Image (cartoon, rainbow, N blue to C red; front, side):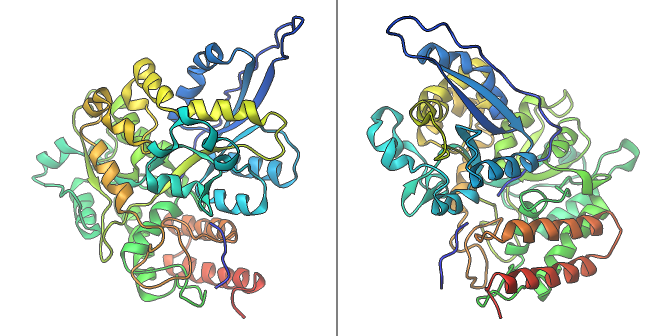
Length: 451
């Protein structure tokens, strides 16, 4: 099979975070300051990084940073346009595990292992968690430094479960989750049984949905690249997800991504939420008085396939067009170092620490104490995810919550649009599946996967 290169997700209002710094006057014999332009995803951990940037300046006073922080759905096309057209707007870009091997193969991003990591003992590449390091690598070399790594699990309200006489297992089945959601629905108090992503996007609603498809025994393609969304098990999984949201999910779910679900959960407006493990710290930090102290965690729900959580990493890469690559390495090495992780914990709170990237993080006494309720489950989820064998039946692709082919971006965006229509009641799930499969087959035929 011809190799084809390779996913959590996020919808927020645009965060106008742009910090520009003037250049200092250059004295005789003094090197001119460098200003790096950095494109980042809008998430809580990166907001913390921007707030702590003065600590980087103390170490490297000749390097200044201008952050451009965007929601994921805006970040991806903005960065893709920049690197693909070689315009050189950015010196550092935050990209996901899906993009790394594809862009590395195209020569758009710098080989960090050969150019920098091998010569920077202080950065401690051997300290990286192996599954996460592999996600930001291509043919054995890193092309991004992992800012954080994550899987997915279930958040739930322990007090509401106790009140309803329910017990959440460490790893529930999806059937149990649906039963819990039905019993925990509380229209009188505007509390939904569960919150799930419904907003379109291959890295949005399709991230959790694909894990459901996987564990139900479904798959996107068979071994001959024939689309399989309309196969019995895939169809069952999609109908399950859509119906769970329609019957027991939040209102207007087709408009909601992780940020809306985070807000609903921390404000006590939903009893369960299935999403990224990276949000465990923000959930506890932002929870209102009724929710704080009542947050429980469980492994990703399963049906046929165990270890159904996704596997994701956001990494920091240097486009090959950057004119300041040495300075860019200093920035991304600092942002993904042991030093930075300790600083973030001490200055901003241990729940804000980027998780899932370094083994040493989980040996810090302060971090262990602050994250005792979820750190173990996070590591267990990361280690259980297997992007090389994501499904019950054999498939020609890798990736847990995405398919490792360039065409998946187009496929996923179109399919998720159809499913948003099903979630909002504009069409049936079966009609959404049929329309998606027709489009997918056209894309795969045009790309030469099937004839």
